[in-house]
Amino acid sequence: MIGKIIGVSVTGAVGALLAVFGWLIWKKEKITLLHDYHTDKVAPENRKAFCTLSGIGILVIGIGLLITALLLGITESAASFLCFAAAFIAGLALLITAGRKYNT
Image (cartoon, rainbow, N blue to C red; front, side, top):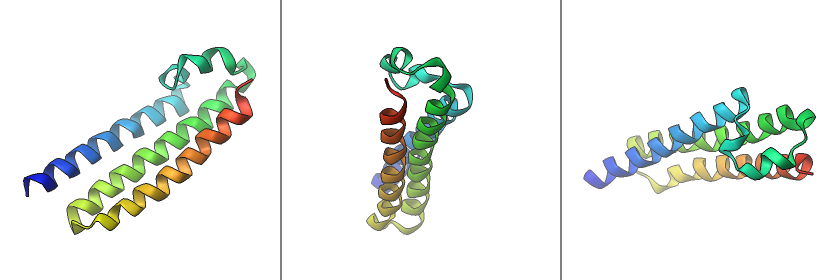
C-alpha cells in the first residue's frame, strides 16, 4: 500500500512539474528552462515558434505522467504506463521537430 502511494505521488509530482515547465516555456517563452544553448542558437524571429513547439512537447509529457498517476492510483495496473509511453513519444517528437527546425 505504501509503495502504491509513493509511486502515485512521485509520478504525479514529476508530471505536475513538467506540465508547469511546459506551460512556462510555451506561454512565457522561458527558453532557458530547456538549455542555455537554445538562447544562442534560436534566432529571435523563431523564438516564439520554438517555445510553442517545445513547451507543448513538455506539457504533453507532463500531462501523460499526471494521467498515468491517476490511472495507477485507480487501477494499480502497470498498463497505466502505456498512457505515459504514448505521451512521451508524442512530446519527444515535438521536441525533436522544434530542435531540428529552429536551432541554427
